[in-house]
Length: 198
Image (cartoon, rainbow, N blue to C red; front, side):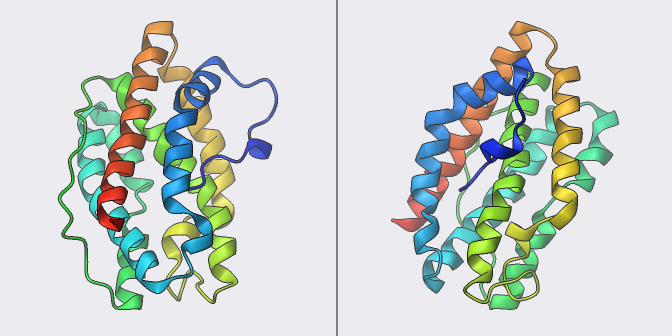
């Protein structure tokens, strides 16, 4: 899975974002290898990937919500992309996921922000995937709504998220907990996808 493109992360990265990128690099690469953009043109593989996202998001959204205060719940719900993947499954005639999902518990607010970093970053990377899928005839209305996501609003939403990350991860201890949460989220999804593709 492609995540935040280096070109979109301007020089002078704030400490939390730089720390998260460094801590998750290897976990990110593992997931990129599993996603393998070159193979997404295969209909069966693409169906499996969508089902993995469907199952993962269903479990992840409630898990990460539990780590955030009540005041952040509407913000989280407004950024949900579950309806996009549900639309893709319906358009392509693919059954909803029945994959068993095991997630690492999110015990702190900082860990929740680290987990959010992974999924918010994936919205940026989804634009790369969306371009590749468009070349194969998959557009937002024909089965690639999830990767297209919020379209032109994706960049501004990412910038807003970066500002929130700065506010929420104001201490080295919070950054450390966020890094652990982010790595766990990458690994949880990688394990789910690896099992689904096997």
